[in-house]
Length: 99
Image 1 (cartoon, rainbow, N blue to C red):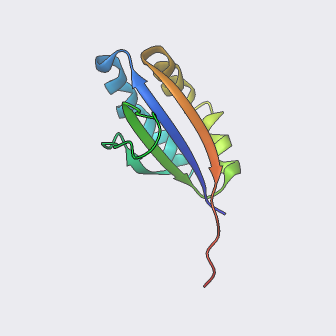
Image 2: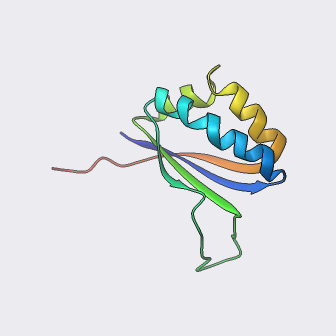
């Protein structure tokens, strides 16, 4: 079953955050993940949620997503992310589709 990492990002240091954007994709791919949405423009349709950046990653499973997030490969990027931005991150399990 696929799983998704959904992230709201509010960048504090844009120059250093660009470094994060250049190093994170390699570790994501290593764990079978891929970007579905990466910093795309958002439009609030209901409520007050208005993230500066919004990211959705897809992984083959929740286990692979957790493995990536806790991995030594992602650790340097994660430290840079925490130093340059405020984030809210969710792991969401997807659904399987019937043939």
